[in-house]
Length: 236
Length: 300
Image (cartoon, rainbow over all chains, first blue to last red; front, side):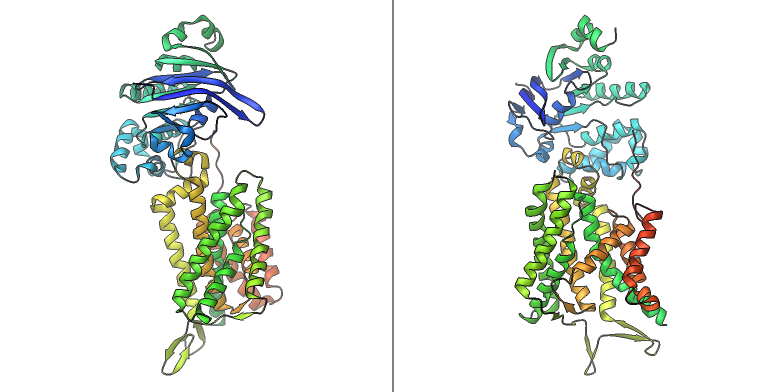
C-alpha cells in the first residue's frame, strides 16, 4: 500500500518571501512522522499547505491517492485529514462540549454522542469541564481540547502543530504521552515540533527542515543519535 | 398614563431598531464588516410588500413573505458581488463599498419606483361591528395600543427567541459562532466559511424585510431613502448594545427606541436625535465595547 500522505515538491510563498522550497515527504499508514526545525524553518507553513489554509505554487499534496489541490479547503476534513493548529485555536467563547461538536461538524450529527464519550475517556479533564467556556481553560486543557476536537472527525491522519508550545514541562510530558497512546491505538500522526528531543522520541521517522528545505531524514532513533542534529537542535 | 403610552411606543420603535440591529450585528460578528447597505434593504423590503399588496392585491402575509424572499436573495447577491471579492481587502475598502451599495440601492429604487412618496397601507386593522379598529383601548380609552405596536413587539420577541435557539442549539448556528470567532479554525473543522457568511447575510436581510414592513406600518410614508435613517439608528443601537452581540442588539435597540420617544415627548421633537446620539457617545466613553460588548480575553 502506498503512503497515506505524499507531499511532492511544494513551493509556498508569502508575497515575495519564498517560505517552502521544494519540500517532499511522505507518511505511511500507522506511522508517527515528525517535522522538526528551528523557528521559521517552514514547519507550520507545510502543515497549513496540506490542510488547505495556504496554497503551493508547484508540486502536489496527495492524500489517500487524491490530489488535495482539487478539494475545497473545507472538504479536506471529511476526507479524513484533521489538524490541531498552532496556538490551539479552540473557540474561546464556546463551551468545551460545543468545541467538540464543531470537531464533529463533518459527521453530520450521527454518532456524536459516542464520539464525545470516546474523547472524554481519552481526556477525562474535558468531561469534568464540558459546560465550561473554553476561554476559561488553562493552556494544557486547551491543548487537550484542541486534540479532542480534531479526533471527533475520525481522522485517518492527525496533524499536530507545536502541541507542546507554551506548556509547563509536566504538561508537555502528558501531551506526548497522549500522542504515544494515539499512536499505539493506530492513529497516523504528522507532528510538527520545536521540541525535537520529545518529538523524535515518539516518532517512527523524522524530517529536519531548515529555511524551507528538508536537510536530513531518518528514523527517530537515528536522528536522535546524529551528532549534527544533537548540535543543532538538542543543545549539545 | 401618558408615560405608559410613551413607554410602549418607545418599546415598539425600539423593537424595530432591534430587528434591524440584529442584521448589522450578525454580519459584523461574522464578516467583521459594517454593512451600511443594510438600511436600504429595509426600504426594498417595504417596497416589495407595498407593491405586492396594492398592485397585485395579494394578502398582507403573502406580501411579507415575498418581501422576505426578495430581500434574502438581495442580501446574498450583494454579498457575492460586492463584498466577497474584497474578503482579504482592507476593512476601509469594504466600508466604502458598503456605502456605495447603499447609494446604488437608493438610486435603483428612485429609478424603479420614483421619488413620489407611497402611502403604505395599514393592514393591522380588525373589523368589529362595522367599525374598523386599529388597536385596543385600555383604562377607558386612556391607554391606546395599536395592533401594529403589539405585532411589532411580538415579532421582535419571536425573532430573538428563534435566533437564540438557532445560534445556541443548532449545528449551523454553532458553526456560525465558530466562524465569527476564528475563520481559519472553523475551516479546519470542515465548516464552509463562505457558505456561512452567505447564510448570515441571508438571515440579516430577511429580518430587514420584516423590519421594513413593520416600520412602514407604523410610519406609513415610503420613499427611496426610508431605510437610511432607521438604518443609521439601528447601527447606533448595535454599537450601543455591543456590536457582535445578539442580546446587545436587542438591548441597544429597545433602549434607543425608548430614549428617542421620551426625548421627543419630554424634551423636544427636533432635538430627539441629538439626545439619542449624545447618549450613545456617553455610553461609549464609559463602556467602549458597548453595553453587552464582549471583553476580548487573550490567553497566551
